[in-house]
Image (cartoon, rainbow, N blue to C red; front, side):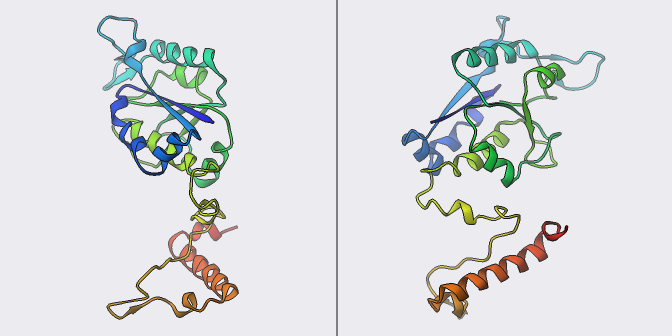
Amino acid sequence: MIRIDIISVLPQLIESPFNASIIKRAIEKKIVEINFHDLKNYASKKRKQVDDYQFGGGSGMVMMIEPIKKCIDKLKKQRHYSEVIYMTPDAPILNQKLANKLSLVGNIIILCGHYKGVDQRVRDKLITMEISIGDYVLSGGELPAAVLCDSIIRLIPGVLGDETSALTDSFQDEILAPPVYTRPANFENIQVPNILLSGDKAKIENWREKKALERTKKIRPNFLRD
């Protein structure tokens, strides 16, 4: 079983995505264990302060190192973690290759950024990997953490009903997936391509490969460049 511990100032923002669908089933099947940690519970002051003003001035509050280190230290005393990940927009962007890699490692801690970010000493001394989900800024790292978890968990053996499903997703071979169709074969005179109804598996696979390349060339041509 892989365990993922998520540290957040507002853990209630992230709990609901784990209570439905594929991730919920993975938790119920004990393939993965998810735990949420409210950073305020590790604050030393009575008013549960986890952020403070920047040294040197400037707008925005900064998450303090002390409660973050307390939480991470407590978790590390209980078990080994392969990665301590910080979700932040100014980091390498999550891709399928990275999701594949993380689905094969052991336990993971995910720290959700908030406010203006975390004290740089957290990033320098406590974090082993930083991940962004795109070149834009959100209110916090909770939604990116949910995205990261979903991308990892669905790849773990036993999570999806069809073990081969994840292997045919877009980006697995640095190419987009081909178009897919289902019933009815004819809807308002819009017909499913005849090749998909032919039953000829070889021709169908050739068609899918051709369409995948066409879509990649049109939408993400950078994938096809040397």
